[in-house]
Each structure stands twice: as structure tokens, then as C-alpha cells.
Image (cartoon, rainbow, N blue to C red; front, side, top):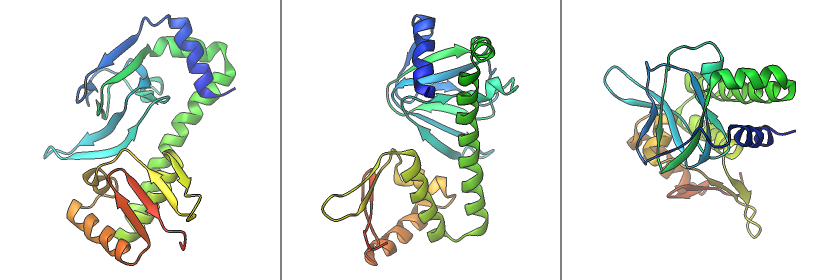
Length: 211
């Protein structure tokens, strides 16, 4: 039974009591705030990240519909160590951690699924960190393409065989994910494009079939 199906059961159980709508650019939670709930994204998209002491945003990822955020509240974290901010008008279920604990106690399959979701998120960050430590900017970019293919919409063009990656990130976001400047990212992406390895526009990247 899928995690999404189990969340649908939770929503029915809650009878929409914890459904809340956030405007674009609104914080769901900030670093240092109390951590007592997890959130299920019903509609919209959310930025997850941290801020440096200088106020620079360090983006971790953008999460979209049918996933959870704030999951550390069921891992023993009493305060938030990251922020969650909407990038569109967003509808979420704010589920008290105590309710999640109760459901997990009753339903072993649900417990396995929710912990698997958490594992995948930590694994995603660990994998990216390893790439950042040991590789140059172009290798980081290619590794990022692999991540985009895994976690967002992707498909093969039926005519050319090219891989199309659709993602929610701006150029500044992409630069932040691989911890470089936007100008350096743009230079590297342009070089890859001139070599006819990729093409890109707005929120879409094409990996040419030769690769």
C-alpha cells in the first residue's frame, strides 16, 4: 500500500480539521520555531532550506504536491533547524506529531512508508553533499541532472529520444543547490549547450540523446 494512499486515509480521518492555505511567499515555519507538526502538501510547492549568518539562503530542495515536510518533528527534534516557505499559493494539512505517532503505532505499514520517505530525503542530501565535496562544477551539474530526473517530471522525447527534465528551480536556485554562483552556473551551462550536450529554457532542461 503506497504512502500517498495512507495519507489519503489520514485526511479522511482528520475530516479536514487541519487543512490550511498559505499565500505565495509565506513561511510555514522558520528556523528556531517549535517543531510539533508535520505537513502534507495537498496543493502548491514549498522551498526548504537554511540561512547563513549573513542572511544568504542555502536551498535544500523544492517539494511539491503529495509529499510531507517538517518530518523531523517525529524524529525527536523539538525546534526547527530549517525553514519552509511557499513559492505558490499552497494548501497543506498540518498534522500534529502526536497523531502521526498514534497512527504509526497502530499501522506498521504506514510507519515503514513514512520512515522510508524520511530516509530518501536524507539520502538525497547526503548524495549531493558527496558530489559537492569531491567534484568540479560541471560534474556537479551532471549529478544535479540525475537528481532532477529522479525527483521531478522527466520523459523521453518520442521523436528525438532526448531526455526532458521539468523542474521547479530558477537559475539562482540551481546555482544554490550545487553551491556556486549564478554567473558560474550560467557559464558552465552555456558551454555544455555549445557542445550540443544540453539545451535549456525556463523550467526545462533537455539532455541530448547522444549522452
